[in-house]
Length: 532
Image (cartoon, rainbow, N blue to C red):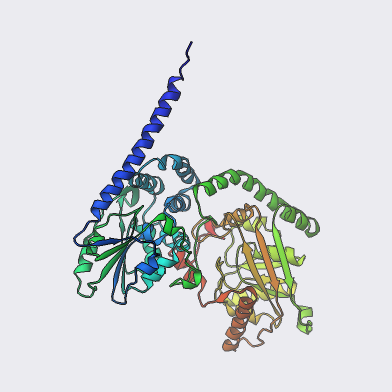
């Protein structure tokens, strides 16, 4: 007797085989159509074993038209960027849906999979509230830029970017950080102020007008990809088009941070890793375990004394390193007042971690603190009023009661930069103890400019092995007279300089207001329900 496979299994196998045949047929057809689309006028396509930087050598008067995802970025996968939109602008549920669809996306043609990712990531997102393109995505795009192509673009007079990605995803990255003059991406359809997940037909009117301009040089070259060509009309103006392939891109080096035309000082978002499909799968498997671990860590920190909680927290995976430099001898004022610890600001847990590191209770002042964080904090926390006289009086009173820690930057910064320090702390005591703070996370950032700030400590503690490094530096004398304004700023700058040297961070004159204008589009004044 012969037994046949169940109908459901056979139908599934047939369906998969048809999808695979369709996929490869679409790929061949797509390549043929792109090949035909590239046959514009008298344009020549150049492909050789030499690198793109050796083949394409634009002069100072050359205009370069380049394919963003095909010839600028090292990776050809667009999935991580849409996952960032789904997770950061949408929700964890939206991100999970996109991850589930990933196996099916790999069976579809490039154009169809792109449309599906746009639909899942953008549907229902409010247009005016979408800031992921300027606050989150630039960091990940910059880390994926090929150094070889950047060297080619740097030598060109005019740079024109063409892409199949939505304009709102790439415009800030290209204009603000790579100084690309012209960006031509896909526009998204908007209904009643919300994205509906559909892309408009591509418009090339801007580029057509550009190449009619007499200021644009006659020498125009193109950079395109054999694998992910956009088939854009902008390449019809090119005298030569230099093609790159996947094998060549694998040899590219990543663009180093020192070569960024504009330094990346601020960025937002919860995810601290590149969200590939495999990395997101690991994250979703860890998320429930990480949530439980964060709760256990919080309970240990708020309920047990330092002698017991510190080793338990270390056993749970938190790494804490404390380096104390040689301190000057205390003077008479130090006997009547507590020590003033001045820290750079990395997360909301800075004062708490310093208290654990020094194994002594500290009071902390902050510009804004959620009620939940204030209740759960195992150390005393006091809110500043932003009134200089009242804040000075309150901080002076706290110093008379014991040791005090303050973060005069006023906000956190993830990158190795120090913001300008508010000089108010220089008037409180003649003995200022600078403390350099640095953190490291592998999965979630413990800070946000636009999300729910009361979740910041929880996300930080959800990391498998978050680490803190504290460097307690030599004391610095404050000022004795409040009227000496130049002296106040000199002391603040000296503290910033010492912190920068110890940590290897670059000092800037940027402030809290600058950060929030870049990341959130406001001045950093948050409501009571969303305070950090």
